[in-house]
Length: 219
Ligand SMILES: N[C@@H](CCC(=O)N[C@@H](CS)C(=O)NCC(=O)O)C(=O)O
Image (cartoon, rainbow, N blue to C red; front, side, top):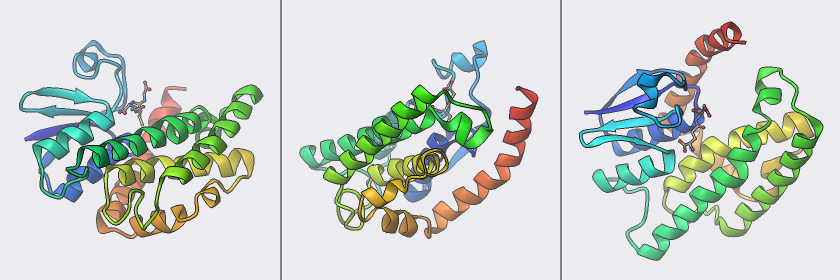
């Protein structure tokens, strides 16, 4: 059986949880925080979560795990079969991660953990988020999903990237980021009504109590 390493507050962990739920794949979890212990680094080379243990070995990097799951468990596909269309989904996945998730992450400490981020970083992040959402708006269809009528891996990555990016933009820059991608709010609201997404959000809320304690004891 597959084993998923990570913790329920992690947005990347939740991307994999949602893919597993959509596909109806059985798995167990090993709950742990990212860390640099020799034991965990032997599984996850950067010490990050998620990591997925399969019968052939361990995989890290969320987009890689999503593609692995789709190939190993082809039911309820998250990528189209057509080579070009599949590449377009990979493009959206990469854009959401590189241009929304990662810039916003640079400001998580101020937006969510009460630690100041320097002004230059904030200026860079604000600019990057504008560019990121505008870029995504250019290539996403929001009809209703990012790539049209089928839910794909791009929607999963967008769901758990755009929410945090929007929260950073609102808290730090008073910007309504999703307003700049017409259709994005409707999509997120539709996805957030799914049973599997609600369950993941409930798990997240519960896990956040322990995570806050962990952060406080490590600061
Ligand atoms: N590129 C990685 C990013 C995963 C990631 O950043 N996970 C966070 C938790 S949400 C983490 O492990 N952070 C600890 C660190 O960066 O060392 C992926 O796609 O899985």
